[in-house]
Image 1 (tube, helix red, strand yellow):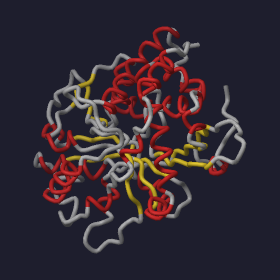
Image 2: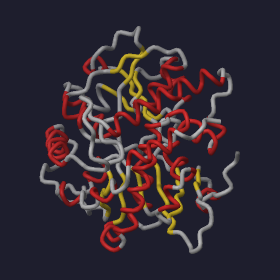
Image 3: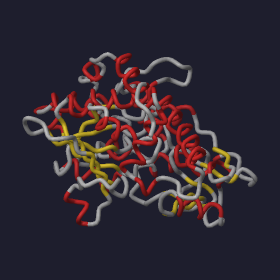
Length: 364
């Protein structure tokens, strides 16, 4: 099934996935989301279920997503109000508040990925077992505009390595091109998210994940960010979006097979071509379960508060980045950048009813 609803920017060469709700009695509010990396089966089904199960309709919104090359490319779109929402990592926005810089006029309002999904993965049968072992090696990233790079440099410095001298960070593209670069030895590690690393493992490649220091493990990954004017003047729209998105996450958690199939429905080119369909779905379910579990629950199994940022953890992360020389100050206004004022509105619905609805859906 090809998606007929493409954002105009797609015609300018920007890859796009548009999810459009059915026509309503009156015009829906359009929410355009700028992504820094392509959607995968682990996360993309959330948007599809938000449409198919009526959660976006219930909030009278139409959601469209556009993929840019990293946070460096998407944040100007949010700052100039060309899109409603972005989904970047925190580092680039925090860095804009350094001494001597002009802060980006954006605010985070929903903690989308509340744990650090970024990993440094190496071939399991190789000699690299720790971050310190990367001396003289190359780390592959999707693009040099990625917002992951500052924290990766901080990790290296914490282990006594100087980026650009002891370790090179190079662009290898996303997914398959990066996987091939690692397997061919053109890079020694991949700095991808955990879902992409798991996808690499599903191809039969065994990897080892280099252990991160505690604060870098705890910091959240991507969050929904909007222009500060939008948060001030149209908070109600953001609350409606956050509520619909939360419902869709719970639905994916309740029926991961449906979540995966819904993603493939809207992005059929992403469905594995050379894999038995049953096996492909089983593997996709593993990825969806992993992502939804880390989104909804802490590592010790406690329920998270949907969309809430852990401000003390972010403050500690800022201190660590300053100590590593990535930020020129530790005096960054975390409370101004990360806003929890809408959090209570995201969960104002019957979560059990959403689970039952999702579980009742047949997987085609």
